[in-house]
Amino acid sequence: MKHIRNRNFKESTRHLFRIYAMIPFSILIVLFLAFTIVNGRMNLTQKTTEAAQSISQTISDVYRQYEEEIQRMAASPTVIHYVSSHLGSEQVYSEFYDFNNRQKVKSIFHIVNTDGVFLASSAPPDVLYSNFAFGNLIHRIDQRPGDTLTEMNSFRYSHDRDTSYTFGQAIVKDNETIGYIIYQLYEADMQKVIFKQNNEIAMITDEHNTIIATTSNVTKGGLNKFSPKLDNKGRVLLNEGKYYMYAKRIPGTPIQVVTLNSYKSEQYTYFTVSFFVLAAGLLLWVLIEFLANKMSARNSESIDKLIHALEQLREGNFNGYVDIQTNDEFQILGNEYNVMLDRLKELIEKNKELSELRTIIEVKQLQSQFHPHFIFNVLETLRYAIKIDANQAQEIVLILSRLLRYSIGPDRSVQLKNDMSYVRDYLKLQQIRFNDRLEYRVNVAEETLDVYVPKLLLQPIIENAIKYGYENQSEVLIEINIYTSTGKLILEVRDNGQGMRSTAFRNDAEHLLSFSEMSFIHQLLQHNIDRCCACVPFCI
Image (tube, rainbow, N blue to C red; front, top):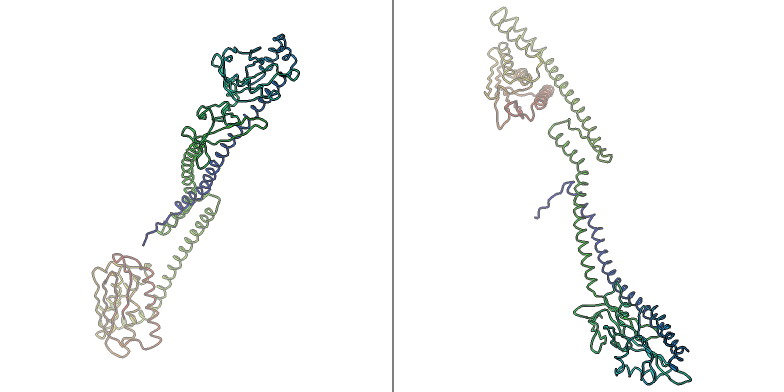
C-alpha cells in the first residue's frame, strides 16, 4: 500500500499558495503567448500593408504630378514656340527646373524634334543619339500623339546616374507633331521614396511585373522581373527566407507597389517574448516561494504556539499559556485555551481538595468505627489482667498506647512495615483477649516493607474476621500474606471462619472493602513498585 505523507499546516499553506498563485500566472502566460502570436502576425501584416499603402500614396502623387506636368508642358505656348523657332530656351528651362526642384523624385528633361535632334536637355544627350532603345521610345510616342506614354525603361547617364521610368508626350501644333517632350525619373530617387523604416523590402513594378525600383536586388529575377516562388502556405520564398507579401496596384496607373517582410522578425519576437516569459516566470517563482514561506510561517506561527502549549499540557505543565496577537480567529482560540487552562487548574485544585477531604473523612469514619468496641473490649481484658497478671496488664497498656497513638496520627499514607507493626499489636491484644482460641500468622516479603499504603489498610478486614469468625466455632486462625507478583503488591487475609451469611454483616464487610480499595487505588495507582503498588487484589 502506498504511503501518503501528511503535510503539516505550514506545508499545506505553502503548497496551496503555490498552486493558487501559479494557476492565474499560467493562464496569463498562455494568454500572453497567444496574444503575442496573434499580435505578431497582425503586426507583420499591418506593417507590410501600411508600408504598401504609404508607398502607393507617394508614388501615386509622383505619377500624377509628372503626368500633369508633361501634359502641361507639351501644350505650353512657350515650349511650342521654342520647338518651332528655337527661341526662348531659357524660359523653357526655367519652367522645368522650377517643377523639378519641388519633386521628391527628380528627373531628366529632354525636348526632341521629329528628326531626332535634341533641342533641349537637362543632361548630356550624347549617349542617347545612337541609343536604339531611345529611338524606339520616340517611335512609340509618335504612334500615339494624343496620349501620354508611361513605361519602365532604364537609361544610364554620366556619374552612374540611372533612370528607371519615363513619361513621354508629343508636342502638337495645328494638329501636326512638331516634337517630343520626355521626363525620365531617377532610379535612386525612386528607391528613396519606397524605402520605409519598418519595412524590409519594397518595390514598384509595371503591369508586366517588371521592376521599376526596389530596395533589395534579391527580388530581381530574369529580365528584371519579379516572379516570386510561394510555399504551400502562400509565403514568398526569397534567398532561403520566407516573407509575407502585400501588393497594391495604384488606381489609374500601370504601377503596382509590393512590400515584403520576413517571418524571421516574427520568430525573433517569439524568441524575445519566450525569453522574457521564462525570465519573468523564474523571477515570479522566486517571489512566490518567498511570499509562500512568509505567509505560511506567519499563519503557522499561531498553530505552532497552540501545538506547543498542548504538548506542555500533555506533559503535565499547566502553566503553558499562549500569547497570540494576530487579531483573527487564532487569537480567539489562544484566549479560549488560556481560559480553559485556568479553569482546568481550578478544577484540579478543587478535585485535589475534595479528594483529600474525602480521604480524611473516610479515615475519620474508620477510626470512629474502630475506637468504641475495640477499646471497650481491651479495657475489659485489662481489668481482669490487673487482678491476675500485672505484667500482662502492663504489656496491654503499652500496646494499647502504641495503637491509639498510631491511629490518631495525622498521616494518611504510611510505610507498610509501620502499618504491619500496628496489625501485629492489634492481633497481640486480640490474642491476649481470646487466649489460645485465636492464632495468627503474618508473612511479609522483605521487598514490600518500604511501600507506602493507606493507613489502617487491613485493620477493618482483620477486625471483621475476628468479629464474625467465632459465630459457629471456638477457634479462629488468621493468616496474612503480603508479597509482590508481576509488579503488583498482593495482600491476602485468610481465616478459617464460615463466612458472612448475614446481609447486614455482608454489606458492612463490602463497605469496608470498598473503602480500602478506593482509598488505596486513589493514593497509589500508577506508581512504581519501588515506591508503592499499582494494584491491590483483596482476598478474604
